[in-house]
Image: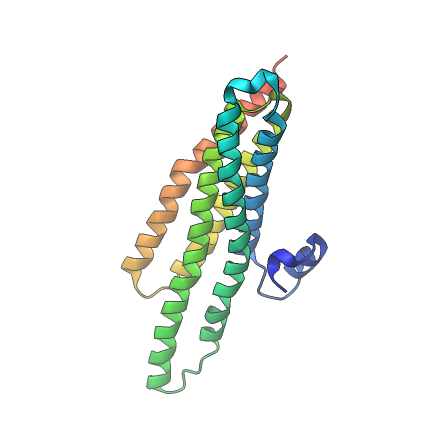
Length: 211
């Protein structure tokens, strides 16, 4: 059964068990999707309200983008599980002879690269989510501003969690130049979008705690 077809209870039970998937990457994608969905909730609670008529078109556009992004993150939950399978198989290859060892090293390097690709995509999608949430927080209904703050926190957590699934694989690569390139991509996303998410969260917190 595909990851997103499982019930919440099934997913969490498998996550808590010994099975390698779902794991950190898939969970990051799921949390990112939840963050984006919360952003859409802010938009849905804003559309149709006279007070926000001037922002109606913007919010509708945000919701359309959010719907696409959420589905992309949902798909990455499954993609992360599928990317892990070749990596697990590569670790199990024999290395008793020089030829076997060379083959295993080559297959493992390729599998590590593929295993990095999905969490990097998750990071990119979570970064997009943070941009959308920033707009929701600024233009959406004040009655749902706490949800915008929650969305920012979830997208940030998912972004950071996905980065660890990049770094654990790049650490094992023999091509250190390529590993450094992938690390740099992840670092750039963290450096740009973690502060953005923090700013949204801080702004929402200030609005909620004003006396």
